[in-house]
Length: 413
Image (spheres, rainbow, N blue to C red):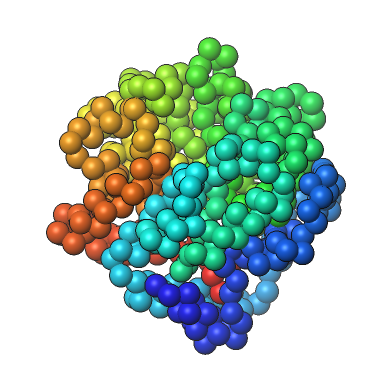
């Protein structure tokens, strides 16, 4: 779909043309790709005070309200923009929007245009040794190649997973883990860190942080422990709620992970994790932080490759319709559901000669996280064209993706 379509729609509906990759956050901290030339090239300007909102701002505070008529008008405007965008898309463009993929190390801008991608996830190599201006310019080139503005995500959890803050040119120090932050300053430190982290990422052009980790883990021997809050379900739920509200207040997308809860399972990057815990454990423990995050306004939920035997003993959660039903119906989540990376070994063991991405879409995922998108996208397109996947289901998923982009200020408002 041509970029002119977005401009036309936004001029028609709102009287202003959107800028790809530009959020409409009230913080004023997010740089647009087109503005990268006017940003300071001095990486030392990315210190802990840069762009920090008023510390007195409480994520618990509700957003300022306008009269009901204004809200209704905004909703109608959103629905109309999304409906017009969707109706103009080809099957190829719709399927492309469902892929939130690892940014390739070469030809990234060209791939955006060729595969009509929904978003890029940036890893350590995409930030390594770069200045803030270089990162902004890279992201600007991706956004310029996109027909529909991209989600630009990264995993900035703190502690052992710090894609961007590991580069001292971008952050004053590598992000601390939730456990270390809490030990130093309690929930106030957690909230302040989430706020400043969001501001800095937005300034670079990153509009989604794949965080917080909502897994419950209190045993230091668990694989996920170092990435988790490290306390019981109730405390983890409070942590997740505060982080999601803080991220939302700054205008950056949040992703709860790893549903249905990692527990004490092994690393699915390298093998299959069979979770044989009873359903009651999920009800009384693992589900609580996810429910809290959903109620706090989380934009997306990432589903793990763990096999949740009490719900589906045959498939990993990421490929299981039954597990997705839990998320939609039991927890009531209406936002974007995405897979963990389908390139992990835990998926290959179950996909066999089938396309993991086709299985993932049929299971109920709205977005596919993968490295080998060049193979997976054509397979999903073929499945839609052959009738194996109903195009109506694709439309529902793309609508959720576009709504997320609208909420992040990426589409004209």
